[in-house]
Amino acid sequence: MKPVPAAMAVAAVGLVAFFVYHWFFVAPVWAVFLEGLVWIAINGAAIGWAYQRVLLDQERTGTAWGFAYGGLMAATLVPALIVGLAHGPFPNGPTLDLILPVLPLAFMGVPASIVVAWWLGGWGKVQWPFVVACLPAGIMIGGSIATFGGTLDLFALFVALEVGGGGVLARLVRRGRSAIPRTHRQDDVPT
Image (cartoon, rainbow, N blue to C red; front, side, top):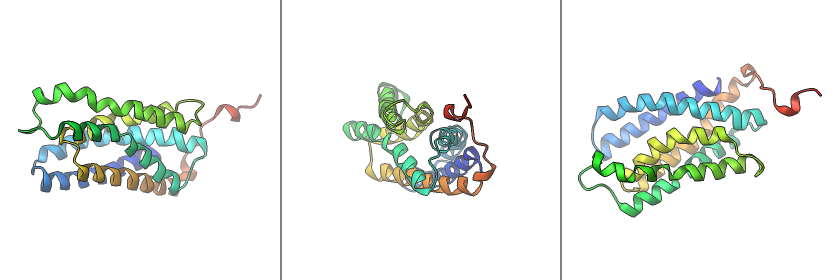
């Protein structure tokens, strides 16, 4: 399976898990599921594209790299957790007038994603596709964690989904690896 459809399939399973969590522990709202369908397309496509560029194009394959990729994605959510723990949950639910002042804090994961992407580049160059893939996840997932007050159970759910999803993504992509064309890297070009 190619990385983008595989990542979208993994994101769909994550959406179902989040919807079940939201239904039982927050509120039974179908709008959360419908909104999540849009995020699956955006987030899944970004994660799959970055997976191809950051791992597969660099010959980083296998389930261990998949778990590491998921773990590194989850690590970029830590700033949102800290923000959420600092301000606590919104008293009467997240309304627009309460969310807007803290919305910029949801982007605190961006510097964390840049550091991780720099590490992925061997400290020599930033792997920008990883940063791009972290943006929709930071808005959707980081925003949820910060909005609901940094609950550790919600954070643990997202970490499990990110790490487990990375491993599943690696397995799905590996099965179809021979169908994925290898892109030309600079050192592949004859001189």
